[in-house]
Amino acid sequence: MIKIQQVLNGFSLICCLVMATVPLQAAGSDKHMTLHTLCDQLPLQSTDQQVLTYEQCAKQQGPEQIAKHFADIYQKKQGKVKLAYLDGGELVLQDFIADDAERYQNFSLWGCDNSKRYCVIFKGGWEWWSYLLIDRKTKLTTELTGEPVFSPDSQLVFEYLDTRNSDTFDRNIIKLYRLNDNKPKLLLALNDTDFGVRSMKWLTPSTLEATLQDFAPDDYYRYVAVGSMKVDIAGDTVKAVIEKTTQRK
Image (tube, rainbow, N blue to C red; front, side):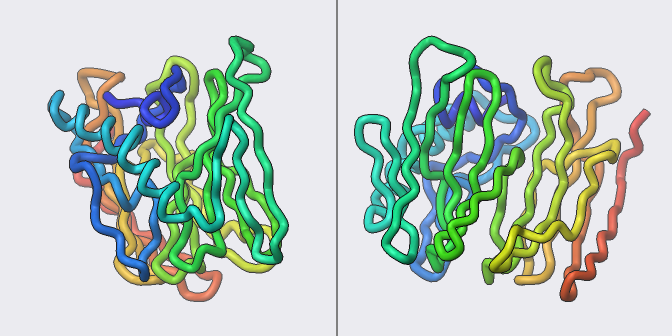
């Protein structure tokens, strides 16, 4: 099973988010550009070739395309990351890649929404990571652990992560936020469920659909698909409908 943090940064962070089967997807100027949009999600049972293709996308082609696409607002030279705010100021972050578990950190642009107001910088540590959701207008930074996915209109962010079978982490994150000129507002949190999100997609700016996963009955370290979840948002009211096709034993 691919560990996305290893693929993104080349060091041993343990995570079970797996996302890509083709090198790159076309991204028009009217769409968000992140590694989530450029690298498709892997199936539950991935072949060696699919894994290799994913690695090429997430480690090489995807980051290179993202950095080039956002070169007017993002640069990284000699380990120093600079992201421009809308008022002309800058967010500056510095890598520290020496053999020091306490201080190790490595930054890379994970992507931005289509308006370029919201950008996400991936911050990798020795055996931890985070996604820095940055509002280039207000200069607010929100630290997320799971992968953030913008809604088509950039008004909402869905965050998900499932590392319950990890030797290092035991996390299951399912959250939904509304973006505004203040700190993102949490609308939904389903982190104590007996399932995790395998993959998700936005159907409309206010509706998303997710594939759910859980542990295989005969193998605690293998996931299997167990159903789906549909989430509808009206204002700050959220309705989540879960359909389980397989019950955990």
